[in-house]
Image (cartoon, rainbow, N blue to C red; front, top):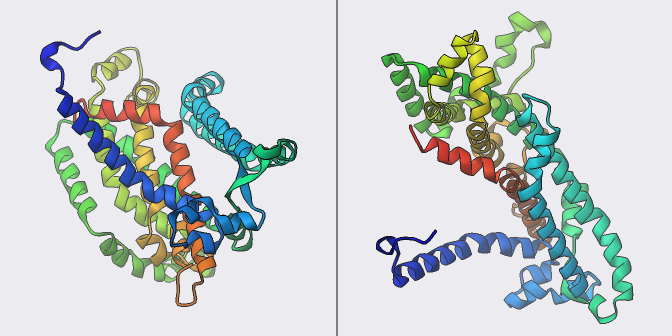
Length: 385
């Protein structure tokens, strides 16, 4: 269907909009692209003055680490196929194999299985196959771009970065679970309540959300440090100290995130007609049954969108995790900062870059897997609020 002439944009406006969007994408994507390139080079190439040396990696290639034209072509094809499967087929697979009423769990398990499968194929099977093919490909098998995974091996194996990843997974899972459980119930109740008390609860939540994170940490810190004395009358001599433990971080991050979660989910619930609740009550459902079996299936895009924002808060947090966690329970973001000190070498800096790229990859995977739910959830939340 053609656009009416009165609504068509002028060529100058379209060109200006496209140019601005292209410039913004370039500015936003360049740092991610550049640190990704640096992470696969030796320190000499990673910090070379010539940008072409950083991209082509002559020193890395001279050490026998590189990609051939065949490697590049096959790698791009595998990445394209992975993106195509995630965008077009993963949703159908989740809908088909998820048990009734557990579609959210199906999405989580589907994303995990898909991500592990991609890592196994791209980093495990593909290098072995390409190594054999390069030996038979002649000029196509000669390395043209230097590339080495030694820094990733050092980060994940030698420096035990996997333990920081598990700590981040524990913290983010706890924050998302608690925030969404409380947020859905509170958001539904406030959306369906017409009292003035609901309005003032939302205002208080908004004020609480505006507080600096350092204020909340300072308020909770004495409680966590003295938690053993506080809990000893209840738990006896084995009462734990919460300071330095993931539970302390989960409690603070939930306190920070919960007002935003309630506001956002309330907006989503308000976009759902109250007639659905009334129809469910007429059919014999209780309030909670109407919420569970009628409203929530409609709400999943909004829940997934809100859960993603909660995940990003916990996953990217530095201040709370660095102040409340000890070295054994440190999450990934503060652990990367630990690479930089007075004795930091260029190798340490490249390893820090490799760690930074590692924690960025799951974010791209999440957005790629849940992009349809995110778009539909944001659209639904914008209808009425």
